[in-house]
Image (cartoon, rainbow, N blue to C red; front, side, top):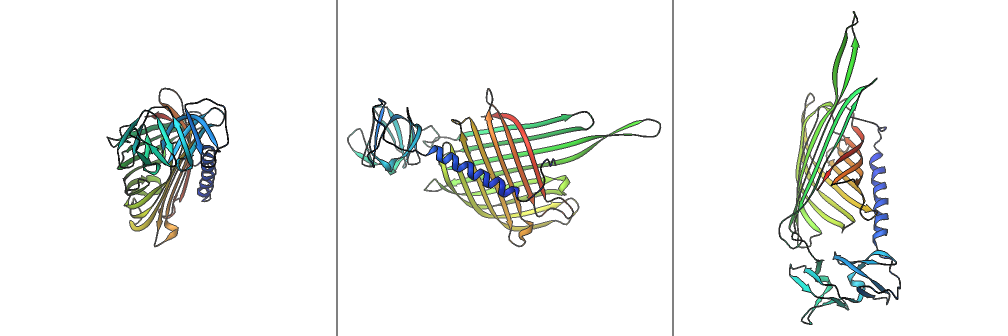
Length: 370
């Protein structure tokens, strides 16, 4: 396993605090700093409950807020409950929380209610999304994913071959979500030695050989911000003496943030962990599973900062718990290609006796996203 950083369990806290700071920065950028603006002609006129005026083009509406592009303030997010009057000549299709679709020739909101074509009214708390895609309207799944690789061939005084493959795909509908992640790493060094008689002997020695597969299923409840799910994971690490480790268990999750450019999920559950070692004695235990998954975007979505924290706390022996922290930055290239810089810290308190408990890696990846 590559260890370019100095081992220290504090890296988990450092990565977590850094992510939270940047997450708060993204939140500050996304929130509307609403002020009085007059004299600009635009498709929509918005009067707030504090009598401020906003003029701009409505680009989206979801999670109880309207997204507006303005000439002076850029992109702003306005909670629907803060709007006293909204008038726009834009044609719009609105999906309600009970899955009814409303096609409107103009958008008009008065005192917390949407004015319908037949002059009827609907409370803004019943609105879900504007101009929904098929999967948002309950038809099929929205599929996203990526596959990346990091390959190194070094020749010279030190000869090293390294291969790392990483894959993630997410299928999400109105009722559920399926997540699959996989990672494989293999590293070997070529060692040359000269024997008596001047004969050079070449030997390839592996220094890393590990993989992991993680699957998750989430079922959204009546309030789609809340969900229940099931974790299933398999890992192996030859040089940590782990022949195979598996874990599974249920959890409860909540979407703490679910905006386009700012997302954060938190999950709490239990997991049964079973480890088969190559040499050491096998063991198993029941632990508490705590997961955090977040991402935020910068520069109009060009850069994406992402964070994953997986914790399996051994309830019978805290020092044998497992922590995996992943912190990275992705940015697009051309034709669906993307590059990423990623730092990972794996602490395995249940590692075999005499094996290193903390692995830290810094990787630069390139891959394809869809």
